[in-house]
Amino acid sequence: MHFMQSLQQAWVRHDSLVCVGLDPEPAKFPVQLRDAPDAVFAFCAAIVDATADLVCAFKPQIAHFAALRAEETLERLIAHIHAEHPGVPVILDAKRGDIGSTAQHYASEAFERYRADAVTLNPYLGRDSIQPFLDRADKGVILLCRTSNPGGADFQALDCGGQPLYLRVAETITRDWNANGNCALVTGATWPDELGKVRAVVGDMPLLVPGIGAQGGDVHAVLQHGATADGTGLMISSSRAILYAGNDESFADAARAATLALRDTINRHRRG
Image 1 (cartoon, one colour):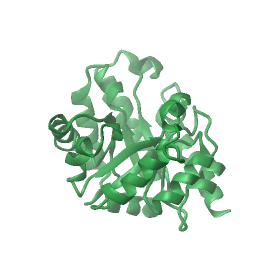
Image 2: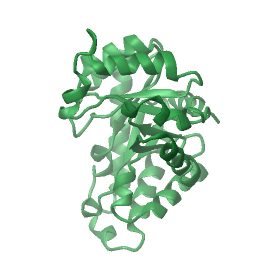
Image 3: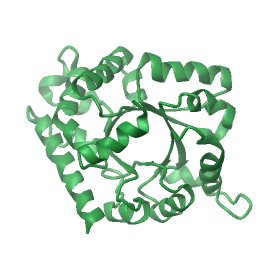
C-alpha cells in the first residue's frame, strides 16, 4: 500500500496523530533487560506491541541501532511491525542525502533492506540526491525543512530573496518534487509560527513534527498552526517521553499510558 494511504488510514483507524520514535538507549532500559540477550529487540518490540493501536506511525532512528551494531535487530523490528501490526507505517529516520549514484544505494537500504514505508532525507544536495527516493511512488519521502534543534536557524532561517531558506525549500518541494504525491516535510514543534508558514505553503502535505515531549514543544500551538482543515496532516513525534516513561518491569505499560495521554491531549486540542 502507498505510504500516504497507510498514514491517512492510520490517522482515522487509531484516531491518532502520534508517531512513536524508536530510539533505543540500553543504559536507560529497565534493569532486568540491560544485560539480557537480544535486549534491544525485546525492549523495542514491547514498546511497539503496547502502543501500536494508539499511533499513526513508528519512527526507528537508524543511528541508535547502528551505534549498537544492531542493524539486523532493526531489520527484525521493522519486520515485526509489518507482521504483527499491518497498516501501521514505518518511517526510517536516517536523514540521508548524497549524490545520485550513492542515493540509489541509500534508497535500496531504506526500502529493500529495511523495508521501511518512508525515510527522512536531507534535501540540501538538491533534487538529483533525492530522485531515487521520489521515483518510489509508493514510498514516503520526508524532507528536512525547519528542524526542531536550536541550530536549525543557522542556515534554514537565512534570507533567500526575501524569504527564509526553509520556505524556499518547502515551495520547491511542493511545486517541483511532489509529482507522485509522496513527499512530506519535517517541521519542528519548537517553532510553531514557522510551522504555520510552512503549512500555508504546502497545503495538505503531511508534516512530521518532532520536538514534543523532551524538547518542550507545545501541543496546542502545533495543532493551531499545523493541522489541516480536517484536523489531520500531522505526525507528531515523541520518543524519549514515551520509551522511558517507566523503568521497571511494567515499562511497556508506562509507555502505553504516555502514548495514550499524548494522543488524548492532541485530540482535545484538535477538537476543542
